[in-house]
Amino acid sequence: MSKVWTAVKGRLIAASYSLGWWLVCRVPESWGRWVFQQAGDIAWRRQGQAVQVLEANLRRVIGPEATGKELRALSRAGMSSYARYWFEVFRLPVISSERIIEQMGFVPGEDAVHAALGVGRGVVLALAHMGNWDQAGAWIIARGVPRFTTVAERLEPESLARRFFAFREGLGFEVLPATGGVARFGTLARRLREGGLVCLLTERDLTGSGIEVDFFGEKARMMGGSAALAIQTGAALMPVTLWFKDGGWGAHIHQEIPMPAEGSRREKVLAMTQEMARVFEAGILAHPEDWHMLQRVFVADLDLARLARAEAKAGAAGADTIGTGGNGTGGNGSGDGPEELAGGRAALDGHPDGGGP
Image 1 (cartoon, helix red, strand yellow):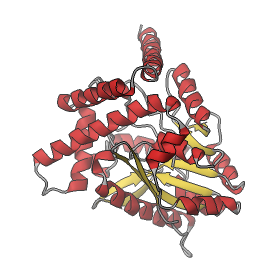
Image 2 (tube, rainbow, N blue to C red):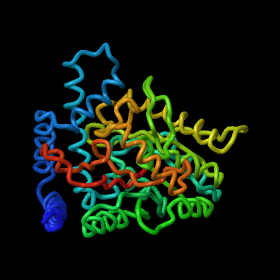
Image 3 (spheres, rainbow, N blue to C red):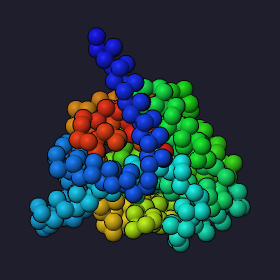
Image 4 (cartoon, one colour):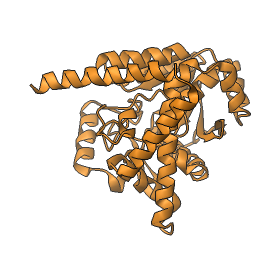
């Protein structure tokens, strides 16, 4: 009976996503935006687990001196921003490249990306879950990069996974599934050696083999894959922060993080990942409402037993510090998506994160 219910639930989820895409691309933009904003506000008012985790994360950002009222106002703005992200994801197929370029405006660091790619050097853009990373991916394609490679969680049911892969591939992304038979690290390294662009969301560890860094004065675990790829291939590693603006989007492609001259490979990965964390701190502090981290990232919040099992599984599989597994999201493992905006329990085991620049 449970298998039957799982199959039925999977079909319902896939149907809801398909319906969402169909409707949002056809109704007036103002109508769709209003509906998603209302859904975000309802989710915030219900104070479900995802909102509680968001507030715990934001508390680290704004500090203990901030009042509860200030924290609640920030989390409400955060859920509004998260609702905007999902609305724009569904709407993205009908947003023109011209509009994306115009409403993005000037992006510091864009020239450095094109300069590196222009001489055949690969580039790794490491992102936090900020703003709209799918829109940013569409933007860099519109700005002349023919294609980039990323990693995304393989969702259930399979029909939903295929829909999200096709959606991003239609935008010009090459999407590698986070699970399955694809040799992700090897494929990403090959793309970089060929002078290509790789984009990865990095500030949450899903592999059990992540890197522990200092983040807002506490320990947090992040993916080490971006740094490991840069070390392995000689690619330029550039952190990216994103945010929303009224009527548009903002982005900053930060300066390349240099590879340390000394130390073991793991020590170099740790040093470069720590530097990424510092860049993300500054970006999140500037736009805390646009940090869509509804999942546990700080070690103090993690389920230690679950973490130990993940580490053991990673060790048994021979995992290194690459951390290029999917960018699934959810309260310490469970997923979340538009259904979370309605306050329901997250039904997806992973988040369809693609990871644009």
